[in-house]
Amino acid sequence: MRADRLLSMLLLLQAHVRMTGRELAERLEVSERTVHRDMEALSASGVPVFAVRGAQGGWQLDENWRTQVPGLDVSELRALMMAQPRIIGDPRLASAAERALEKLMAALPTSLREQAASIRQRLYVDTTGWRPSTENLAMLPIVQDAVARDRKLAIVYCKPNGQRSERTVDPLGLVAKGVVWYLVANTPAGMRTFRVSRIEKATLLAKPSKRPRDFNLGAHWTATTRQLAEQRTRFTATFRVEATTAKWLLEWHTGKELAPSDSDGHVAVSLDFDSEDQARFVALGLGSRAAVLAPESLKASVVTEAKRIAGEKSF
Image (tube, rainbow, N blue to C red; front, top):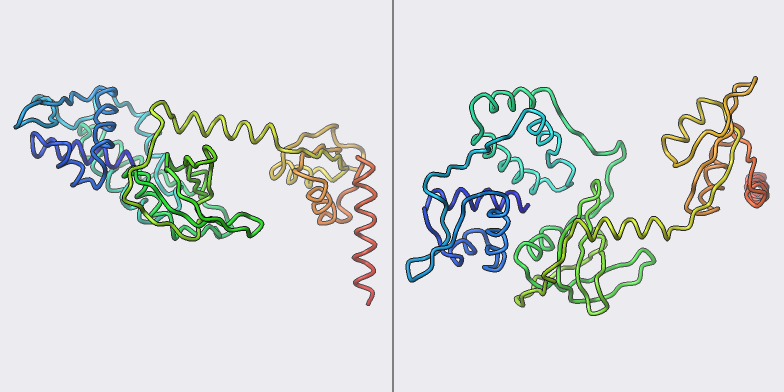
């Protein structure tokens, strides 16, 4: 989203020579503050953009500069292609990002442009799972608009337990984790993360949002996810399973193989779960293909649940 805006900004400046912050803000549908922040980002990345003061002033590029991509090598180009926007789960954004990529390809030297075309014919990134996504992204465009334009957002949010709340937030950024979108925002109670699919209603407000000057979205997300991982309750269980079953389990669950295959072709595996309930669910699903070795509490709960199921089936 921001990369598309930055590229559009460069193309506008190249076409119009000089534009005011207000003109750029109107063309790009963002605030003048966002334009100023984007200009700082462009300058920091080496783009020779500068402000001209006075009645006829504005932003402009060095007259000898063109929207080329110096120093880009084949490995970087391949990485750029692998980061294609299909992961974001929004066809409208994916289309816009694809157009931005096309513009970037057009600015490459001929030799790299030919290699880019070759890579695109030989590489397709499909990060969707085999199961259809259940994420409801109806509110995503409004949330994206609020983030891009630095505007406050009024939302109706539904927690996993069904509890609903209404709140006004200062959007700070969006994070796409796989096909799941999260909104990071400031609230009266502090910084919070909202799953976009749980936002039932979003209203863009006219009032500008407040953004901490030193806020870094990437650093914040990394710290938050690390903290969540550390706080998450873990339940470890040990199973005796066939080697083929062990391979499948270790593809889907965090764990490790404790011992090599025995004479019957079985191995012991240790698996991590979020709870004992989850471990019991997996154990019952495996049926006779697995034996619970530890802990004793899981053994007992599996036996109890199996008897209850058998009792229900006997009616």
